Amino acid sequence: MQVSLLPAFVDNYIFALDSTEGTVVVDPGDSTVVERHLATRGSRLLAMLVTHHHPDHIGGLAALSARHPQARRIGPRDPRIACVNEVVGEGDHLSIGGCNFEVMATPGHTRSHIVYRCGKQLYCGDVLFGLGCGRVFEGSPAQMLVALDRMAALPEDTEVYCAHEYTLANARFARMVDPENAALAARVAVVRALRDLGQPSVPTRIGLERMCNPFLRCDAPEVVAAARRQTGSDLVRRADVFAALRSWKNTC
Ligand code: ZN
Ligand code: FE
Image 1 (cartoon, protein in one colour):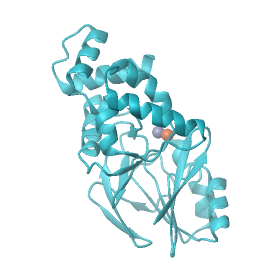
Image 2 (image 1 turned 90 degrees about the vertical axis):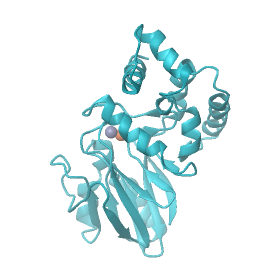
Image 3 (image 1 turned 45 degrees about the horizontal axis):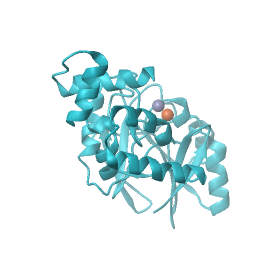
Image 4 (image 1 turned 30 degrees about the vertical axis):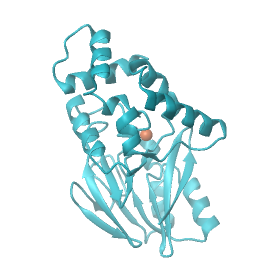
């Protein structure tokens, strides 16, 4: 399947996966953006995959469902997501348009957040971002860390399709936490050049995030030291380091 990034709102991406059979969209926050893509390609809508209930991810579901009643509407079990007619969860597999998706439950950003894997591609909603991670709105920091650890454990060439163009904004905090990290400095330079050209920094790769993303580096001595300096406490457990980083970033 060929992946297109459809910019929506200020900094969202809706992902359109096209095959000869039709199009699968992930997190269709805005129906007009999706309709334009379908019209341009002359493609039919096969399915809508949703990661979580926030309006910027599901806002287009109702209008798309009305116009494309044959399309599958797939998402997590959550009463806040109307229109979904196929509920999926941890370990479920979906076969759509010649692509096999595997579902992982990743609570933390929201309690019912899920992500989808299709071969080397990971559609991770608001869990993992370039050089950052989602805010912990409903779960605990420890839960969010479990979700991030599972993404970090995927093969390093996994392409990470994050739902927001946040990498450059996240870079400031990452550099503050981890100023001596040469891989991070190099990554920031690449991302800045891409953004200057109006190019997306998404997808990123798991291997790259493992080296550069402070939230995937809660074990790195320099990251632990920075979190300890910031909080003035010992932070013995990894989850405490993560929680400290997450709330530090919220104040930046
Ligand atoms: Zn969200
Ligand atoms: Fe979002």
